[in-house]
Image 1 (cartoon, helix red, strand yellow):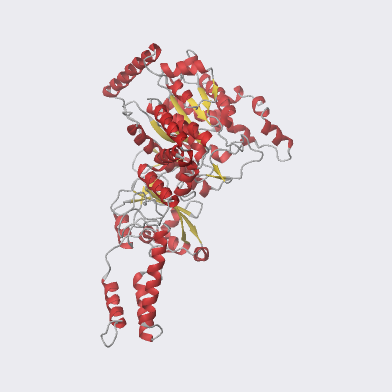
Image 2: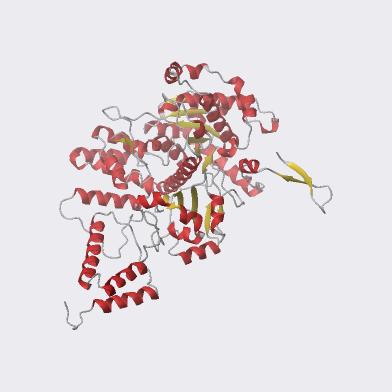
Length: 637
């Protein structure tokens, strides 16, 4: 509990001291800005423009966005009459959202389907928000599950939340590019965002929420679900937290309505019950607002929350879309390789591809129709499937990466040898690398290196932060890591403005400083996870493992003892001087290493490396080796 004390020399002014747990759970305070006349003028102009658009839709000279969503096959079940939703979308610039619980370290292809209508709404001027369920993921959605979810550790939850957050940011960045490509001009009133429900669940007591909405909720609708009946019949049953989940999801919706005017929720085909329950929660919360000045409008049905679900896509065998050989097709290229992602879309059946083009691309319907006509002339060419793969990969990873993967796919299935890139050439799209950014190219969300990695305990807890930065691939050397830390150009996940571990439910970063090696432990989440960031998009989630486990993994990291170029050259020099190795054997080993690198390059399984200037010590040792390996009689071999 907070304890008030008197501060010496400042009269009777109280100073509050809080315990550590209170500080950890305290939400990040957001500075509020005053609203000026220019802003109000922009709001008025945007509303006038929207009302003009509404008149054009009513007159039949413009299309209602709800009709566009229906044409492309997004509307499955509506929570509210379809005509009411259509009229609401004509009258008001409402907001919509899609919620995603970070129960896995990556989004998968199935997540794209409910996101697509949200992206379309954004392009047509509606507010669009993706909500990360940092709090609800801890409870677990019981919908459609025959058993309770396994609890997720704090470290895993933090990693999942971080990865999903950056994946959603990447998707939104690519949506902006797709909008420009399709001729949509961004307007001032376009609004989008990535939210996390931890921001309100960590700030408001559950008791207050239950008092406001609990009395209006009934267990009957939830108990009537088939999966709930089955679980209640089993010995395990259902936990109280799982019953509370729909209330939590509904409260999320209310908070978004309160802050962002979000009247619509879009969900997967299994979320209809949760959307209906969420509408009840929103209405109950709106009606129980104790402060009249904060009360939300409820004049007519056009102030009510609405929603819809997208259809469940299955193949001819009934398998869910987004599964490949029973496994999810992840958007993370290090969980499902880019080539496999592209191949998944190319492998879609002919009788499904037109529907998928409508649902997973932003192509006009006329373009899709022409593509299907071309496709029907020779289905073996899979023209429509390749277009589906290219467009979807462009949305997920950006156009440069998508075209590179398309070229790779064509080369693999084309006749003749596969050409290799010229020496020193940076292949377009090849910047999706493990832990290194492409030198000379700005790091973006589309070319950011791999996020997750492991490093040994002796490094993380026993070496300087500069060495850790170098080992994580965020610097080209320890000295550069030192310089970046000194300039505070590297960021570490931490409690906002404090030198201690970040609360796992709130993603916040502080600048790295040149602290003592033992101080790095202050920032370990759950004692084994460290998160570093360079710039806006270059992030590393580092799992600390024991030295024995790291050695068993067979991995190496930059700056690892015994792996440097100078050390290898010294070892070769000692062998030559001791007569353990002949110059011919040394040359043979070097040629074998070159052949191995060439083979890796041919298979595209090599790690990108970038040449850097050799140090004086390395140059001196190489000169000695060259002298020792020269034939003594001066003749060439």
